[in-house]
Image 1 (cartoon, helix red, strand yellow):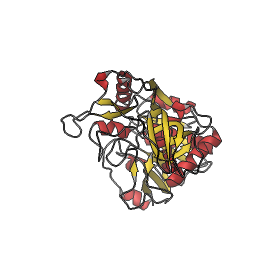
Image 2: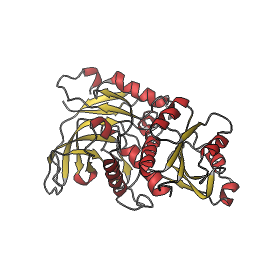
Image 3: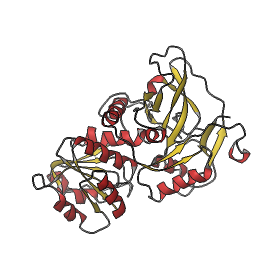
Image 4: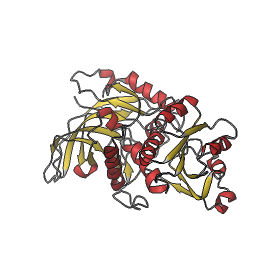
Length: 365
């Protein structure tokens, strides 16, 4: 029987509870007008999935499939489809309701992120799903299922934070990418290297910094060391001894540190705040005309632009670990543990095996 991976409701307060994973059996859906039926081959984790299990994400649901990243093959199309996608390998758009406005999603209730919430029945941790044909895009041909599933949400977030928001996606400019090892940060690094941008990285792990340098980073600093900003300043090229932008997913003291390195009018492009939900904004940043820009995922146009760039430059997402089996509970828990403990360098992916008629009853409703 076809399966969906969901969370099971148990008592507990937000931030203290950790909802168990559960596989439920469902029928194969039928595509309606303008819709396609996708059989998923792989799906990937993001931090929002960890937050959902901890009840730290708004609007979570207990009966919709998890995971906003997914790759599969179109098996069937409904009436009035125009794109001829039957047989195509596709990536599901990780968001809904945002077509092309560069400022942000339209001020309506239609925008939402895929997977695991009451607003969305478009999660990818399942065998089959029906989507509007406009909500899937052909996968870059050079990527396999695991690599393609690792691309959507983190790749799009990276593209918007770096290309759309930072003003630094030009050859010869200097950027700092914080928290290297996470999916978004690694995608920013890969995009920057392909564009000829000088990318520097930060991490609390010297090993992760060393691995980033093998991927093309110009250098890196350990943020756990006092005075890391002075160390980074020494690494910058003599003909451009400043940063043009910081692409940050951590928050914390980043403004205080970055203002000493950024050029006047430089940009902090903020896509996350894993250190804490608040940051200080300093008068020194105001006087330096530094811009702080919040950034989320992106529009469908940015998604298509990102996929085209990945295909053009044959970029392959970095995979930290993959497991096989949608009902491989031990493997799934290992992936979630790696994310929770910050062990991963790259994406964490589930390769979806074919559904079996006799799934263990303790895993299914």
